[in-house]
Every structure is written in structure tokens, then in C-alpha cells.
Length: 347
Image (cartoon, helix red, strand yellow):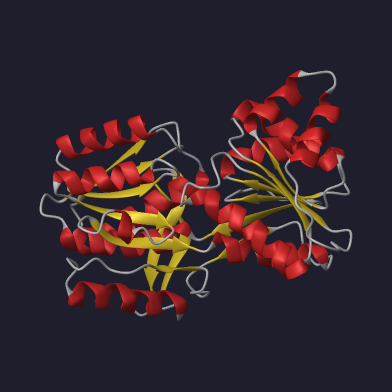
């Protein structure tokens, strides 16, 4: 069975006494039989919609890939607001799902609250920073990819002003911003990088408004990490004649005149990998971090035609330096805060 619990159905559930019957009805009305699941059930809770061509779609596709590979029974709920996270996770755990995927670092607090109550369910926070007996986090090393984009952005800017825009500020977005800064400053030490957090990954109007404000301030290269709102940033950049970066999926085709390249994160493959570990009872309560050493999961997308070959080659050579450990990003302190700094072996 593959079930879709719409946000409206879920909100009815979370506010009603007869919640179980309502949700089971939703399950029966929106399900598809997938054959013998071997008793293994996977669910995913998503902050946005599964057709955003970005973060949420990649998470949904990961569960679908796990269903194909493992024959698992799957379900999802999309557009889960922060206030409903604990109930969304609890619901699937109550109904015996073996693996509960919370697709976003904003679910961390809910996972920590719920997981101890359901020891038979293993919880995975994608982009999370938590671990425990039945808790793991799946992390893409966003800093590595954004470092490459920082190099490209600093090489392409004319104003020496770059900008980062994301939906929320938490550890993963902080890491991505840090990588973008480190990469840019490796090319131009005095370059300026501003950051904006819209408070909403999917609000197109907010994304466009923030992009226009960023451009008005003088930035001519934008690194964005949004979900359904990401095309608004890329298309606005194209309209205003500046450059931008795609994120999660290869987004060059959305705005080919603006997109320099994309930080491609194949979360579908990463999620399917952890699902396989879970089915084999080999998943551990730890943080799994995947970087450029697995190019099928983390890599750069296609380059825009405006990116000169020497800049492309610089970025690709830097990937090899990171994979071979000639360039590392080690824990350090800067300005009294814990962060990561670049370390070049032999430099």
C-alpha cells in the first residue's frame, strides 16, 4: 500500500477525537497495492509538496525508489507545518511503520520528542543533527557543494557582492552559507556575502520579493536553497540580468540565462540507501554524512553556457582535491563560534 495523507486530511486528524478512523479512511481512499512488502513499512513526512522539483520531490522519490528496491509498503504526508510535526510522526509510528523519515532539519525537535515513545520505529531526520537509540540523521555535506559554487560565483561577479537565500536558518543552511563564503573568499578575500531567510520554503511571493531586494542592494550572484519557491528566485535573477545557482535538482533549464550550475543532491538515492540498511536491521543511531566522494549523490549539475571553461575546470579540479583529501573542511572556531575552516594539505 502506498498512501497519501493530504494536509487537509491530516489536520482533520490532529484536531478530531475520531482521528484514527479518519486517517485510516484517507489511507484506504488514496492507496495503491504494491505487492508483498515483507512486512516492512516506510513513511515520510514532508514540509512542502512532492511536485516542487526540489527538496520535497527528491524526498518523495527516495521513498518510491526504496519501495521499488525493497518491495516496501509506503506512505507520505506533505505540507506538514511545524506545529503538526509531532502528531504526523506519532501517527505513522502508532500504525506500525518500521522507518519514519522526517524530511528536513526543522523536524529535529519533533523527532527527539517522539522517538523514545516508539522504540519499534526507527526515525531518520534528513538534514538533521540528532541521533539516538532509534534516531539517525542523514546529511548531505552541503558545505562541500556550496564551496564549489562560491568559487564559481566569486569568479563571475562584477559587483563583488554575493547573496544567499534560504527558507529557514538551521545547521544545514548555516553549513551551506559557510561553504559559499569560504569558496568565494578563496577567490576574492574581500568579497561581500549577505544572507536572507524568508521563513517559508514555498512562498513564491516572499521569494521574489527577497530576490528583488537582494538585487537592489547590489548583489549580482545568488545562491538559493528553496523548495517550491526556488524557480521564482531563478527566474527573477534571469529577468534582472544577474546569475544564480540551482539547488537539489539540476535546475539549469528553469532559467538557462541565469543559472551558472546547480548543487545536485540525489537525496532519493541516499534515502533508499538508508532504507535498505533499516530493512536489514543494520541502521545505526548516528549521523550519516555523504559528500563529493559519492558523485552519484552529491555533485555539480550542468554548467550554464556563460561560465568560461577555465572556471568550470577550476571547480572540477577542486572536487578532486576534496575527494583526495588535499582540501578538507575541519572543525574550527571563528568569532567565538564553532564552524568549519578550509585546510589545504601542503599549503
